[in-house]
Length: 140
Image (cartoon, rainbow, N blue to C red):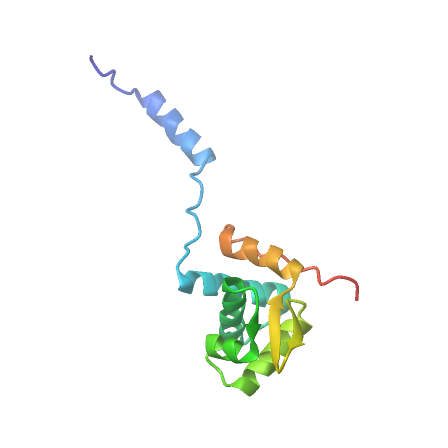
């Protein structure tokens, strides 16, 4: 079988077609650092969290809540790399942002993701890098 040499017109037409139809972007990385970076960008864009340390702590706590249905404040503290008192303040901030709900069971306070936050976080973690959905916290 003989290969037909590509003419200048064919090569130019292929190049123009590729220019007008760029390849799709690569899928987002599932690496923990990449997930935390996307969460930080989402917290900054959707919720106005400007402090990088705050973004990292909130992101780590959100990852812990995505991994488990409920976490105590002590578990959130361990996930966020902060002490219990700081974790309680961060958990209150997550609740004020409409991302979590909490309740007491016995002596422990349990935190869980709000339904709207679950939907938004799924798009942030699994979606394209530019997908930064807002969270509808319901009527105010």
